[in-house]
Image (cartoon, rainbow, N blue to C red; front, side):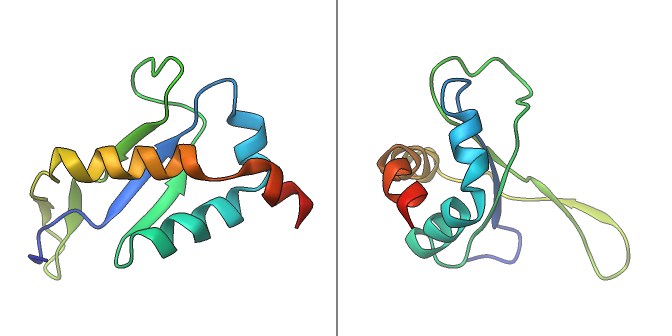
Length: 99
């Protein structure tokens, strides 16, 4: 990875799954971190746009450098966003509630 590549993503669950995901968010985040080593994730309930019935996956595109200047990250590949979204759907909520 380039030092300016995106390393953090914000995931917004669809309205129908929001309360379920929020209830097990730490397990959900651990699952995503295991699936995508080297990346970090946060869960949010508000999206910058209407996401409808799908998971929204938003890259954190800026970072503060050592000299306190703000830098823009390289745009992540579309396939990575798609794989993260797929992993969100594959997360088994029922299994998480049982644990």
